[in-house]
Image (cartoon, rainbow, N blue to C red; front, side, top):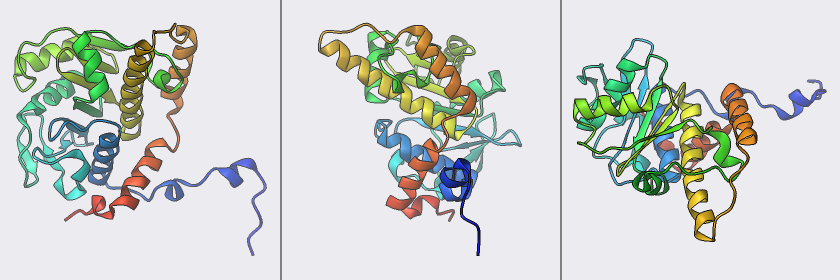
Length: 254
């Protein structure tokens, strides 16, 4: 007979396997795509996610599939020249943005580009949305504006220009286009993408009813730094668990 839990950690902190069973890298990316679809990253078949692997190759979602139907077996592996090494699907030509990004920033593991509704509204306004609430503050004010639209990001020169604008920041609004978010891992990518779209939606609604002063910058920055340092324990795991419960096929490896 086992002893009952005696500490707060024993009683309230589940093990990683209880939060979410171990996922393969492909399953992680498929769950991320589906979870972000529910957050508004849903522009038809547009958008791409890359996840850098230990060998330097990238796992990417295929073109021609909505993010809410991606399964682990659909994920492709490419090299930094864009050659498909594994996978039976076509990879978007716009993956050039990710190739240039990963070449320039070795610190980036996961990159997400899409055209979510509210983030794209602010990108089209060519304004960075203010922070009005706690969830909006999960990503700090380090959001840049790439205030140009020369060519689609499938063009290498345009992709490099976007990467230069991003600099060392965590996210960028691409004028008349969409958003780009980078992260250290899949969980951080989900939190940053979710928070950016939440922030964009909330800021729009606040302005629509007459506007209000934003959250004090010191408070929002302090919260963002804490979340970025510690991560958001259990957030991605909860969202991935939901996707698995709704459609276990997301984990199918083929």
